[in-house]
Length: 116
Image (cartoon, rainbow, N blue to C red):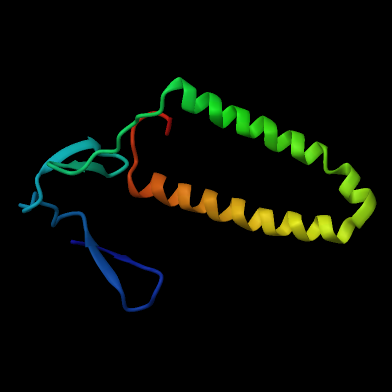
């Protein structure tokens, strides 16, 4: 039997000769054995109900946001760089929390293909 030492001293794990199939109470299908992904039987699936109009609205909102950013040059001239920097930091915090939540969702419920 082979022993492999982990990072902490005194902790070891048996590998090699003692491998054998085990029984489990959880039933499902294995999607990718290499990555360890599995889909449970009867589990809720994510649904994709985005229509082309929804995607167009997201693109339009991105264009409007860019236009507002470019148009904020007059605010910079009037208020100075500190106000703009503070707004940038607050907005960055909001964007960071949104992307962090989206990353958590992608890890929690991985699906094939893109999220759209």
